[in-house]
Length: 76
Ligand SMILES: [Zn+2]
Image: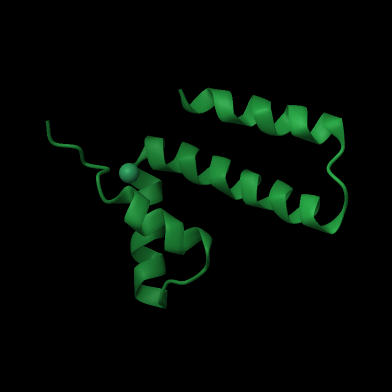
């Protein structure tokens, strides 16, 4: 089965890590515009990273852990 998002992982990971060139970044943005799956994934990953960054700066409170767990579910 052809998966139009087979390469999404490749695009999204560096996108999230801000490792893309301007042109590549534009491509990734364009894909996110068209692809609901990736958009959802990207928002999720973005939030996840935000929380992880916060968690590194401070001790992760139980409420935040629960929030993270809740964030995982919409993907499946
Ligand atoms: Zn996609």
